[in-house]
View 1 (cartoon, each protein chain N blue to C red):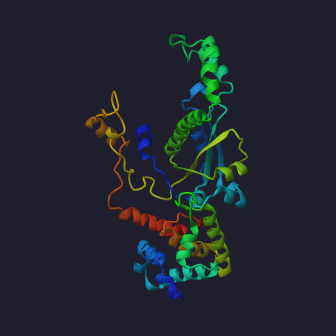
View 2: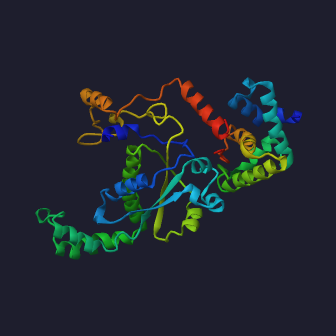
View 3: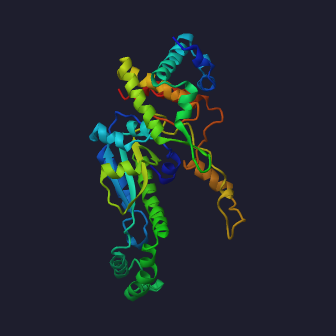
Length: 117
Length: 262
């Protein structure tokens, strides 16, 4: 079940618009939002905070940049989360990539696992 | 394949068939093409390490990835790590004199052993080798020539190719490359899982925007009959259509196949 706060977040609305979530069948949309919501709960961050976590600012100039280490941390969290959920095989890849889709549509260039099966 | 067709067919492939092996014979063709590239002072600027994905341990493969190259590295059966050798000046005198003796550097153009020993080496090459910026420039240009030939040879062999940046620190540790090798690019190699033509040629600006005749500001004038001939011969191909719906459908299908985000 999706946390009602999840959909109210600007980053989630941006994801929904960019990824065409609103054109998905209701079940698929709910599933994707549920995965994001559960992941965010697991790492103790709201969706907007998860996006912000990946983007740092240079102390000297205030310029925004994407942190490699932070994205690596997100990938580690996703691996652990997928294992905790009991996902295996293609399901594990697809579901973790739901969260990456959310980040990508919020300007976070992140890549993860591929199903080569 | 005809040369112009090879040039016209090349695309940066991002979706490789992960389970279709690349024949080592084809990789050798690519390496030989690199080895035949034009090079200053007949030096071996370009160095490469060929890695077959499935011969690497999971741990090593993870070390080579970054959050921006994971998908490509996982899909491509072969990754060629390209470097440039900053010690290209070593042995340059002997190589140049060998070319003089063979007549490749002819006396008609001023080439002699004394010229190499007394001028080229002490006044050009040695100072160049001590200038880090100049060395990096020379190595990058020369290695790039070799990499381009390898890439085109791969296309000629029916393979998909794509150049990318890589995690140089991680690669140095894993591949154990010497300190004087400067990281260039990785060349991913495999059979395309996407349309090998990638939906059409990528947008390019007209020649007149980059190329000039006589002096800057006097743009090269295209000859329409040459342009038409290059279209017939495959160097110039249909561009990606403005309506990208077909390409987007293809990407969606590939995303479903590989479990990738959309």
